[in-house]
Length: 224
Image (tube, rainbow, N blue to C red):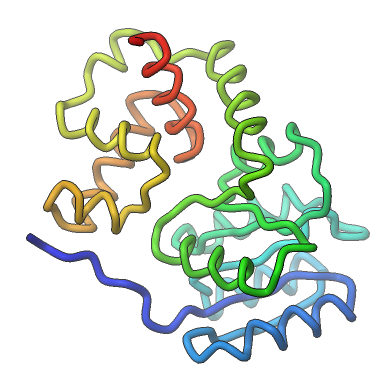
């Protein structure tokens, strides 16, 4: 069995316009020996320059930057460094707002009033391939993503073109497994899992792992 490798040293770029929060979160993260943390306020051009010059494993992005469009900045980060995984930080977000960030390519969401341990766990999970939502949001977000999928369903031909292995990957994504966990479960390499996930997204015409998870839930309910 080929074992997936964890990211040993996780580089984190914290993007927050509130100085007190920026310094507090940065200090809390920097206390972890496996985190290497940089913190920056907007403007957008400054953030994107830092991403291009030293691409981080994870970007922590404030969902409501004072004079910035956080969704536009998310798109800029994804374009400047496709390998960088983005976690959006927010406080009591509307489900549709979270869905927009997910569809924009965010890999996770963490509440600003989460515990420090929850921040640490979310960053480590996302850096190693998982998609993470707070448990209080999961059911509601899946519902919204599923509604979107119903309005824009993958064609039967495209869905039917998936291989047996790709269907296995879809099922495991639906259970919330990370790339590493899928690799271990199926006894295949991490790069092979990433290739399967890419193919699944393309064949289903979806944009994120969470959309695939919602699709998997729909298929399970239809077959039950």
